[in-house]
Length: 186
Image 1: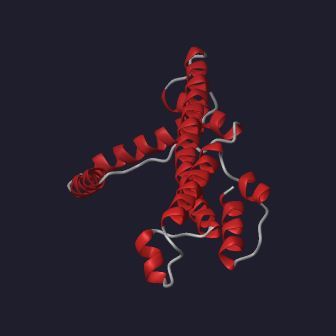
Image 2: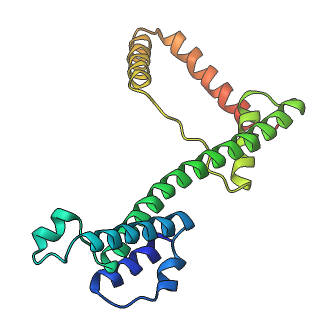
């Protein structure tokens, strides 16, 4: 819509003749009324003032041609349409997020009813999002999260450095056992 309004505005600015029905075709009834009111004001201005001889005098009293009134109306229509686009994008984004939440929660709830817990239920929700063609939620990390992770990593290095040989063996066995459990089908 904005593109078509822009094309029509460019024709008007170049001075090309555009039929009145074509001008009104892209405008809302309120915008058409606004354009007609602006022209009525110009007609009143023409009854009280003679045509100014200079551009400065025209600007001083607000003198406009029909073409200029139409151009001003189209500029305002483009601004309104662009503002409406942003609102439309925000509404579409909110609707998509709501739909994604419903799909995820439905699949997650079903997985919990089937006895799955934790990561398995979460994974079922993500699979449902993918099947529905919706984007999975992206993890947003804050500055604090990054600092905490860095501290945890530094602390783990200190702990690993202070371990005895037996403690390291026990830790390796535990990690191998956890990996085996993850690979094991349920």
